[in-house]
Length: 295
Ligand code: UTP
Image 1: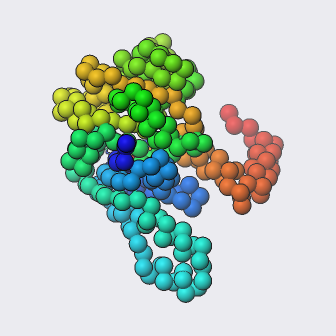
Image 2 (image 1 turned 60 degrees about the vertical axis):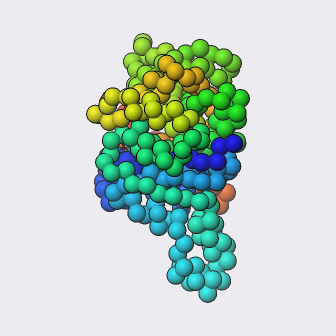
Image 3 (image 1 turned 120 degrees about the vertical axis):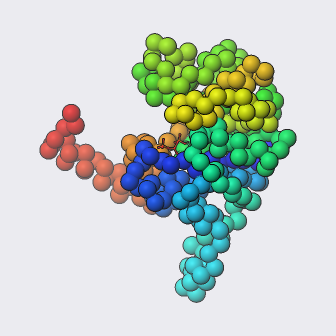
């Protein structure tokens, strides 16, 4: 059974400056809920009981968010705002959350390596702290199900249009069934003509303890950082690595345009805003269309 998860959240978030100059991008709200709260909720909904957040400089707001806030709770209970009170309590009771600080931003692979002692000999889930996935079955649960069948490292992938493969980490290998591939290749941002498939790495993984040995033997890669995909590529030489095409829609909050799209979609999905927001969008698009068409 997989009970532990690691959430890397130490990155600098340079793609989202200036918003991320003094606040973590993982705290950027989707309407009223910070991105990382969705990520923790997905882990909890998948049966995870213990979460290690890889934190770093300027990330205190994440710890404060999952901590109790007695002053706020007492104010809410005095004002008889029971529902808000319960919501605030729920956030601090979601899971057993631990923190470790990544000392230098040396890449996702380096961030994961900080979890070595905490996860020990157990397989564990990894959920990127800046990526949310809207799905009927939590994606981490989908990966845990695949792990139970294959007993090896599992990488979540999603189909992307072929003309967009150059934006993603792409996997290639032998298709074992409709949604399962045995991976032999990880290619970072390939040209369309060189992409082995259109299956893009989606920010969720199940890793086995063997990943730590692979990380130790992985040289620094792109941006002079230790890349998780390079370590996974190395792992394929000694172990089976499976790509599972997940059911769900992924949103990368660390990218400004994707963030904007996420807010719009989640706004439309939110019951209390759905109707007025839909009408606002229709009116705005009509007015915008009359005034100026995007080039
Ligand atoms: P990104 O690849 O988006 O990198 O990280 P980044 O450095 O945060 O962002 P940009 O590219 O500068 O805009 C994916 C996830 O991995 C974490 C990030 O916090 C994010 O949740 N991460 C990345 C780390 O924890 N440590 C790192 O050294 C790099």
